[in-house]
Length: 408
Image (cartoon, rainbow, N blue to C red):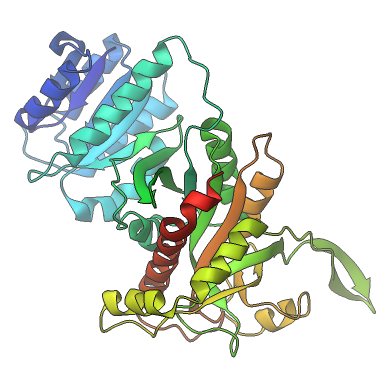
């Protein structure tokens, strides 16, 4: 195991080095350098399993010009040239949140993950430790995976605000760990009655059915969850639902699936939707929490003064598509595909499809998404956050109340 750390503030890694020693990584296996040029020299000579790269780094050790350019140049050279020995994994690190917003996407495209350094807590150390444990485990002889290694897997389309609200649930979350070379999950657990239920949560790299299907298939293949669920935000059908209401998608389908034909010289989509139902055992229990007015009122009260109103839970048809709807007209056309349509979004069908074709043991699949708009130009301030919140809290209510009956 060889680790390279490039950071001009090398003293802040004393605690990390001590933690890594506890899992068998000796100090002599770790190289610390203060600049991009020093990292370049080491990468010419040594193959590293893990490269921890500060986003703001000077080019030379004696300089104080801390910019993201030097780190990005080094990443570009690692990607495009053969002069440097490519590390097994690269993790970006920074203590400046504004830098993540500015160049985070460039780093995300070239690294395994980005870790946010903090002086006040050691969560970042836990994340890096998990990465190192993953690399060590992959180097060891592989062990047979248990039939089910987790009870519940939660998939979100967005890191913020969807996964962010899930990770606010009081479910004993740990720092993210790598599941494979591309996927990170956070582990947690909670009790439903006397039963301890294990859970993982992850977000896709991009919105859309394809990214969700790929992430869901990976999680199902590697963790074999008993249940896989999606929560987050969606558009609702006016006069049927309101902002903050939670939609239980049953069934889901791709509203753009079909064949383009000519009708009087005009191209027209001949619809051929493939509808996939949610798990019916889960639906039965969702209908029970939908009647729990005190619990739903508490969800509203706990959010605060910006809440749109006490949420309701609506089981019903929700259509998925690959485009964001904001014209207020397309949703009316989609209603022709199912007269009871209650919502439209971009991912659920991908999750349902991945679960439906999974090898045995096949997980139960369902989605709880909350309304943040009505697929028209009128957007409410703060509606996305409240919708992500009610979706996550509805999932919590369902699983803590009935999880012991659903995890079978």
